[in-house]
Each structure stands twice: as C-alpha cells, then as structure tokens.
Length: 334
Image 1 (tube, rainbow, N blue to C red):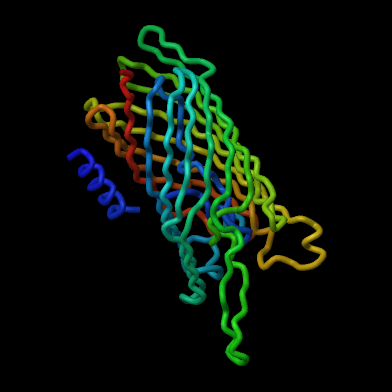
Image 2 (tube, rainbow, N blue to C red; image 1 turned 90 degrees about the vertical axis):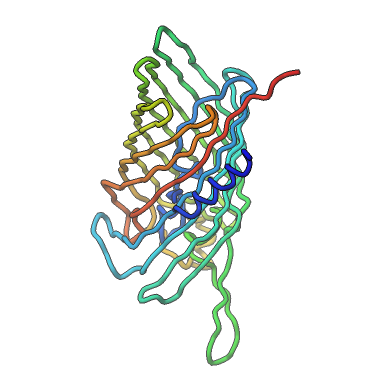
C-alpha cells in the first residue's frame, strides 16, 4: 500500500507540473547553472539514516533579454522538464555522502514564428557530494549547524549532439551541433564547493538558514569552458499545524562568461556567440512542504525573478518551479 501511495504521488507530481534547473541561464553559449536542483539546502543526516529525494523541475520562458531590456527577435519559446534524484546516507552524525543524478525528460527550443523547433532528451550528469558538519550543537531550544561540502560532477550526458539538415538542392544531409542550451551536459568535470548554516528555534518552530554554492567549471573535450557559477540563498521557515512547512528564500545568482580554447578558434569559429553568456540574477522563492508518516515529505517551490541582467541577448528566467518528494528512514541494526 505504501509503495502504491508513493507511485500515485509521483504521477500526481508529473501531472501537476511542472519545473527547474537554471540550466538555460546561458543561452547562445549554452546551459550553465547549478546541477544541484533548486540550489537546495542540505545539512547532514542522522547516523545510519538514508534519504531518497526525487523532484521534477519545469522551466517555461518566452522572455528574452539584452542586458536588462526585453527583446522579441530571438526565439519564440524555451522549455524543459528535468528529473533530479539523490540518494544520501549518514555514515556518522557529522558526515553524509550522497550520489545525485539528473535526467532531461524534455528540452524544447522553438525559433521565431515557430521555426526551427529543436527537441532533446537524455541523461544529464552524476554528482558525488560529501558533506561534513563542522558545528552541530543544541542548547535549550536552539539548534546551530554549520555544514561544509565539496562535490565532484561527472558528465554522463551528450555535449556534442548534432542536428541533421537536408540540403534541398543536392538532397544531402548536413550535420551541425545543437545549441549548447539543448545539450544534455556541458561535458566537463566540475568541482562543487558548498556551505550551509542553520539556526533553529524548536519551541517556536521557526528557523533561519543560509547556503552558498560555487561551481568551478572544467574544460570539455571540445575545448569549451562554461562559465563558473555561484549562488547565495537566505531562508526563513515556519512550521504550522505540525506538518506544513512554509519557507521564503531570497537568492542571488552569478554566472561568468564561457571560454573557448584559442587553438580551436584558429581553425574554426563556433556556431554560437561566446559574448552572449554570463548573467546576474536575484530571485524570491516561496516554498511549501507537507510531511506525513513522520518521514515522507512532498514539497513545491517557485522561483520568481525580481532582477535580471544578462550579457548580450540571452534566454531569461520567466516561470520555473520544482515539485518533489523526500523519504528518510533509518535501518535498524539487528
């Protein structure tokens, strides 16, 4: 019965949806952003505790910017549906290790006047993400936690997928690379640096916390380096009716411009503009979650952009949401 309930909830999540990954944050130069969906805050688990967390993220945008000015001569629409799953285990009260991966259910880019529609799907990246509590103490009704982590991203998805274009006169098919934003991965091995600070007030059922993430991007085999990524989030959360959590987040995001190996530029120029990469954004993110059976939580959040500045013409953030489920349990030792 329990498995059936989980399955029904998952189907409901898919149908309600959708949302997220900021993977489209760099447009002409291709997707960047955080591979950790939603920039989600994570401390450590209890010793021998296991967490299975899966969410669906949906992006839909018809908004395009040049700097902070709206433009309407770029694309008709960009959308994506992404599933992100992590399995984490608490090896001790201070150390948690998680393995995380994503799958692009759909990426769709529609050109101006519904021309040149491109659709992609496939496996994303694999992330190994250890976290350690530097501080974890409880005094009276106050809990303080400081967590540091350093992860490693292993690219599994395609980064050089091509489009076949039929030449009408010769009848021959020519292949050109898909835009980077339509690839499943950047193709690079990246390092992830992470910090999380939590201050909770048990009696008041109120918490304040913050997280920061910095991703040092590597070079892919094509000689491309997607811009480094940084995000800082401030959170306030309140539990009501014992089972409902209300959270409000204010976050800032920065993405650097991408780079291309100079040797490649000597022989051929890429089919995208490297100057049309990089951005600065501020989001307000409301979230609600509901916990039942003490260890199963369903949650949804919406990212609302309140400020955006992009370098040259790019896809901008518009509508982005996440809907997911988390299940935590501790296996009894016989």
